[in-house]
Each structure stands twice: as structure tokens, then as C-alpha cells.
Length: 90
Image 1: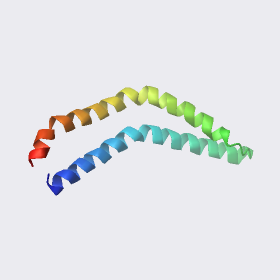
Image 2: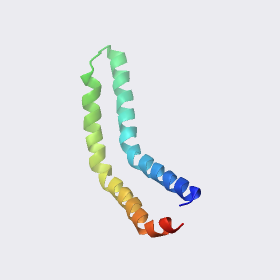
Image 3: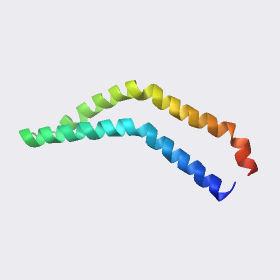
Image 4: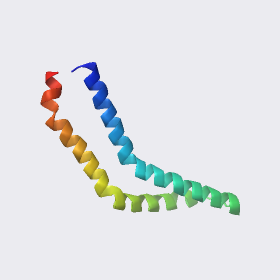
């Protein structure tokens, strides 16, 4: 395996990881921001107030984006295993 191939495989792995995690992280970020603004306005400092809405929204996002996330991971994994013989020869 050449250095360029290893770098390409690493970049593809990081790209796939970022694509798969983006919906969940984005939803958690938005909900956390909204809850923080709500807490600042009402001066309520309750730790569970941030945890429960995030878990609910992340569950909803996981149900909605889950099939797409699995499809992206499956495509990456299948491509990796299909080209493994080529990777080993280089």
C-alpha cells in the first residue's frame, strides 16, 4: 500500500464519518442552543432541561435519517471490501 492510498482511505473514512454524524450533531447543537437561550431568558438552571429535549430530538433525527446513514455506511463498507484486492496489490 502506498502512502497516497492510505491518505485517500483515511480521507474517505473521515468524510463518511462526518456525513453520518452531521445530522445528529447538528440537531443536538440547535436544540442545545434553543434550550440555553430559554434558560437564559427564564433564569432556570436545571441540568435535565438540556438533556431530555436533546435525547428526544436525537431519537427523532435518528429515526428519520437512520436509513440514509445506514446506506452511506453500507456503500462505504461495500466499496472498501470490493477494492481490498486492489489495495493490497498496490
